[in-house]
Image 1 (cartoon, rainbow, N blue to C red):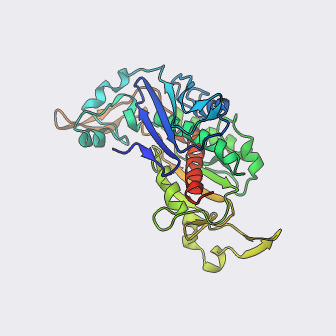
Image 2: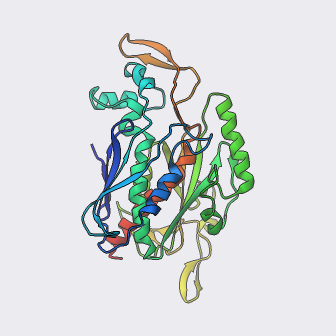
Image 3: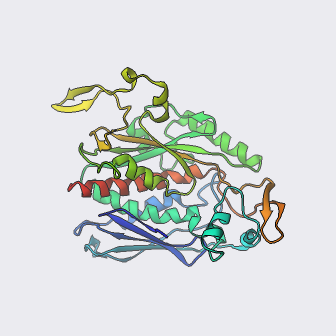
Length: 357
């Protein structure tokens, strides 16, 4: 079992979806950093459930408690421990899945791996609720990145068949925190809402794609071969429940491009070498180029849906039908935006520290 990530800036998560609490322990935060707990709480509020009709109606305050590593508002260099207590817990909807695993969920695989001792309530450690711990650790990393002139931004660029326009300005992305969909393209956001409502009305769910940008990363960061910028970020992204794909820059579109189209020409700007375009997504040879690191993450549709689905009864050894109840997001991607963003901040800071920056 692995519940930690990172090399110098390291995080360890603990807890379960319906347990007493979930939390994160952060090692490697430099001493002397002024820690604004309000900013950590603000990041948690962005992913908090029950904010609007488009998200799960589980009512959690997600109030962060800081237990160690900060004295008088300043980091001491000791491990920083943060927790969120679970409050609105209803495990009744999970009693029947002990023998009838839910399609699209980790129930069956977890039961096999942990020999039936895994916590199935709310998905246990496999629940998207665990990502609140990622957000706390990432919100802390963001405050260290501030001093290095680096910021991380993200927004939804696709829900269902609706796509946002390309090349939206950073400033527009920064201003969407209170938007229900978290998309910086207002026209597309309205159509995305209709996609979500359409899935909800059909007792179904829908997938999404999120774009993330790391802005201000200096050139020369990354540890090829196996800890390249893409390797570290992809590792982190695939640790987030429901993530099924990651691409950098032109990504899969590059398969249909020619080298003359995909290559980014080098130019001088204000005495610095930059690239005229950014099909590489800010990374060459696994090392940052100094251009924005841009990647997209595909989020699968929520597997918990109201439709009747086929499964098996592990006790009777027969096929059966399952109907899922409980409180679930019709589109996980909406609340995944701050998760992607803060996980990227963790990666950015750890990679920087490994480069001695």
